[in-house]
Length: 153
Image (cartoon, rainbow, N blue to C red; front, side, top):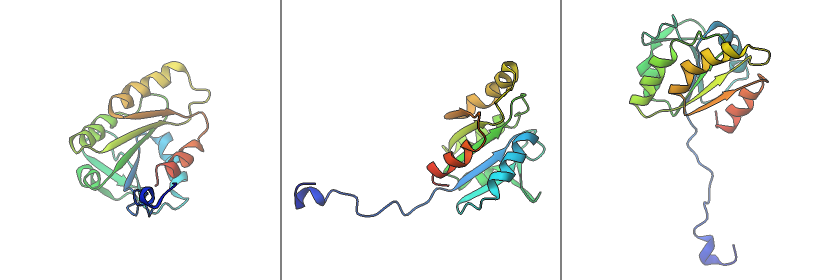
């Protein structure tokens, strides 16, 4: 800035509203990763599994308590779908549709991609991609934590 007139247009404070993020493991392999990430203690993030993984509108927190998908999505700014290669991410459709209906941004992570067969990656990608605005195929599983920090979790 070169003048006081220009300085008045400068943002004077950081964004004071943190995001409300929901991280949902779509399969058992992803659940292990989500549990590991959750142990780091995130202030504005809740972690879930896709309940019975059938997409019937139920989630379970990491302690096993069930909750309604729509209720959790209603107050979310971002939903992160986490799955491993193998095509066991059936609940992505129901979760993605609920997010789409409420205009909630989605991100998909495929974890454990290192060494996975291309056909296994393709199966999972086909289930997640239609419902994710961004998809990350992660060869290094610590990448999710770094991304969560970048997303202001």
